[in-house]
Amino acid sequence: MARVSTATTVGTTIEYYDFFIYGTAAALVFPAVFFPALGAAAGTVASFATFAVAFFARPVGAIVFGHFGDRIGRKRSLVATLLIMGVATVLIGLLPTAESLGAFGAVAPILLVTLRFLQGFAVGGEWAGAALMASEYAPPKLRGLYASFPMMGPAVGFGLASATFLITNVTLGDSSEAFLAIGWRVPFVLSAVLVIIGLWIRLSIEETPVFRAAQESGAIGKGVRKLPIWESIRYQWKEMLLGGLAFTGLFAFFYIGTAFLTSYGSTALQLPRNDVLLAGLIASVFFAITTVLSGWVSDRLGRKRTLVLGGLIGLVWALVLFPVLGLGQTETGGSTVAFVVGVSVTLMIVGLMFGPAGSFLPELFATRYRYTGAGMAYSLAGIFGGAIPPLVAAGLVASYGGYSVGILLAGIAALSIVCTLVLRETRGSSLHEDRPADEVEAQATSLVP
Image (tube, rainbow, N blue to C red; front, side, top):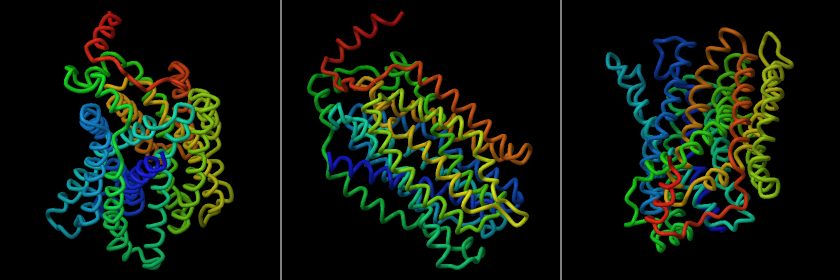
């Protein structure tokens, strides 16, 4: 379990580091580098639109990698996702700017969107594979705890992204020209080193015992005639849809707390770039601790109770978030302390919901299409909560002020709570499917009207 926990946590950390340096750059750099002709406000909206592209690529990745993960193994799919993410991220760091291409300046954002799509495609297969690798190895009574370790990847990845940008900015000084020309590229190119380390670790682990047992029993393999995506939709479409809606709040708070607040702190609050990045670094520590703690709590209270608790706290916090961010604000800008508190509490709430996710979603689905089902549910949550709210939030702030974003978050939290309550409790359930595929399909077909 130590080796598996390390492999899954390091892998998701690298994937989400790559994912978040894009989000940080989208907030601080890309409006000026790739969309200079649109102006500051429209450039920010366009930049977050490219950020959203990855979320619509996630279901595609979940279907493709889920298919192979459910047919040939979790490990092989995880190696492929890491390679694709790594190559796409390094290439983003090498892209020409719109200004450098002159008359062909439109090519730069097109290439950016293409590589962003590949990032989302890889992450669509990454999360489910890492969650399954941890949960299918873990002992049932500690599954919530062990499955929460790969869920720390987003927290550690966000912290690394903030730290890398902070160090780069400090090294180059407070020169916007140097940061826009060279500084923002460094975190993207350096990710190549992390990818090599991650591949070495992932290649050292074996396939999960649950998957191997399913292969031996005939539940997975040659006897399976149906596609995993078809089976998951046919037999468990409700769990897929409700699971996606249940974690919509997680994504909404996460990407509002990371990408959007990074932009909000720099523009609306006029905080120095270093202060904004330092706030992200501090918040990531609380985020990681809360993620593991909530996974441990879910082994005792149950997955649903832990998730509902996080949703209720999030609903209340959403209504006070922007008033808290405004504390101490003067004509010259906002308060760094208030910003650190705002980002930290927001990401702690995300941790409360993230910890149980690694065990709850895999436990909802049958072994033969678990990779696909869990990945699709998670990807749907990414679209509903990760792609749309940050994009809408920029327009809401411009028209109605920051409090309107808080109301949006509260509504999403309420939706997540309701959908979580509808789903069944999964704590203590078995992940094994030891019956042949023909027998499983015959029973499932008899239950479908």
